[in-house]
Length: 183
Image 1: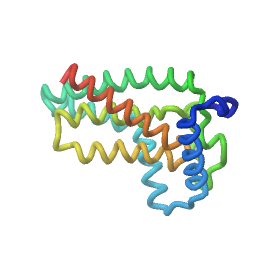
Image 2 (image 1 turned 30 degrees about the vertical axis):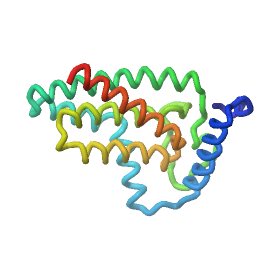
Image 3 (image 1 turned 90 degrees about the horizontal axis):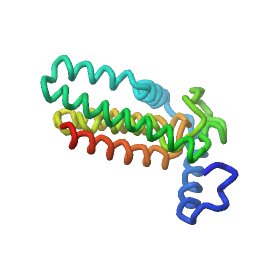
Image 4 (image 1 turned 90 degrees about the vertical axis):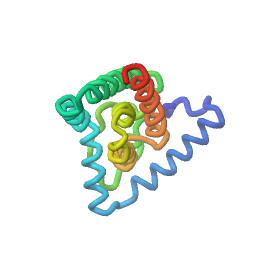
C-alpha cells in the first residue's frame, strides 16, 4: 500500500486508503486540547513497552500461579506479535502519515519507516487480553490502556486508523491464542 502501488489496489483497499487519508488530514490539522496531547504522549510512551514490563513484574511478584501464567501468555503473544509486525511492515511498506503530511502539534519521531500494522497496538492487545482472561477485575483498566495506546498512534500521526484496527485484531487474536495455550 505504498504511494507507488495505489493503482493496483482492490476497490475495498482504495476505499480504506481514501478514508484513512481523510481522517489523517483532519487529525493533522486538529489543535487538540493540552490534556489530550499529554494523555496521548503518555499513552504512546507507555506503549513503548515499559508499562507491560511493569505489569509483568507486578503479576510475577504478587499474582501467584495465575500471574505467572498471564505473564507467560502475554510474553508469548507479544513476542509473536513483534515478529509478525516486523515482517508485515517490510512486506506492505506503507508510509506513515507523518511522512506524508506534517502534523500541526506532534513532533514525535516514529520508531521505524513503515506504518502497517501498528506494533504498539499489537503489543498492547497481545499483553492485555491474556491478563484480562486470568484477572477479569483488571479488564476495564487494561482495555482503557490498550485503547489509549491505539488512539495515541493515530492522534500523534504515527499510524492510519486501519493500521491500529489491524493491530488490535492481530494483537487480540494472539492474546486469546496464547491465553488458551498457556492460561
